[in-house]
Image 1 (cartoon, rainbow, N blue to C red):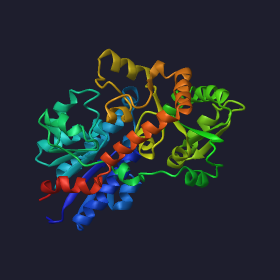
Image 2 (image 1 turned 90 degrees about the vertical axis):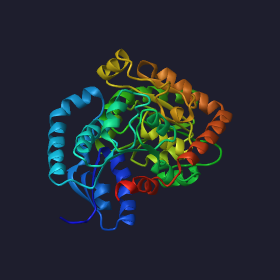
Image 3 (image 1 turned 135 degrees about the horizontal axis):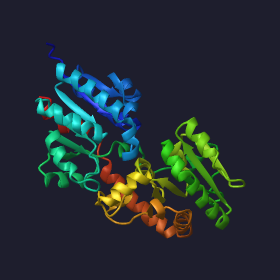
Image 4 (image 1 turned 180 degrees about the vertical axis):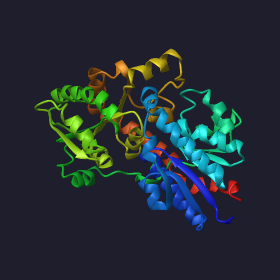
Length: 383
C-alpha cells in the first residue's frame, strides 16, 4: 500500500468547484505529493484533482427539483461510497452540497474515515434539526462566516471559521469607471446614465420565476428615472435566450455573457436574486434589493413545517444581524415592492454611503485567506 496522502473530495455546482480548487492548491503547497480525487468540476481538475464523477451531476436545488433527480443521485452516491470503502482515503472533504455530502460523510465516518465538511449549510436558519446529523457525520466543520462556529459548539460539533475565499478575491475598493470601460459602457461622474444591474439568478428556474418580475420593476424605475439603463449578466446562452424573450419594448436593457462582477461594479444599485450573488454584491460594495421565489411546493413545505428559523434570508442581512438591505420573498417580491426599494436607494445617496461602509466592514471580517486557513484547520486530521 502506498504511503502517499490520499484525500477524497465531493463538490457540487460551480461555486463548490471554485472553492475546492482553492483548497486543492493550498493542500498541494503543504503536501506536494498528495493525491486528490472525487466528484469535481473543471476548476478542481485544473488544480490537480482526479475526476471520478462530474460535479454538475449534483447541481440541483429545492425540494421539488431534487425529487426528479433522486434515482440518479442515489446511484452516484452508491458508486462513490463503494469506491471509497474499497480503497479508503486518509481524509474525506465534502464541499457544500449538504444534502448529498452529509449522508455520505455519515457512512464514511462510521467506517473510521475522517471527514470534514467545508461550507456550513444554513442550519442556523433552515432545518435546524440537521445539526444532529452533522454531529454524526463530520469530524470537523469549516465555516465561511464568523457567527457559525458558536452555533455548532452549542451542539457539540467541532467547527472552525476560516473566512470566505470570495472576500480574498474581490478587492476592497471597486472601480466603477474601470468596470464600465471593460463592459464598453459610457461612465462619468454625473450619474448619466445611471446603471441598474438585474441579476435574476444562474439557473433556468430562477430566471423563469424572477425575470418578468424584475423587468416589470425596471419599467417602473425607468418611468421615474429615464436616465437609467439596465445591465443583465446571464450565465449561458440558454438563459440569455429565455431572458430576451421576456424583454419589453422601449426599455434600455443590455444583456451580457457573464461579466457579473464588472456589471455590479459599474452599477448604482443592484436588483438581485438571493444567493451567492448577494455576497458578491456586498463585497463589491453596491446597494442592493434582494428577492427570491421558490417553487410553490418547496415554499409550501417550508412554511407549513416552519423550517425557516432566521429572521432574514439574504446574506447581507444575516451577516449584519439586522435589515441592512431590503429583501422580498415569494408574493412580497412584487414589481411594485422591488421598484420602490430600488428607487429609495437611488433617491437617498446618504443611505447608499452608510450601507457601503457596513459592507466594507463585513468584507474586512471575511477577508482571512480562507483556503490557507482551511488547510491549517485540518492539519491535525492529516497527521
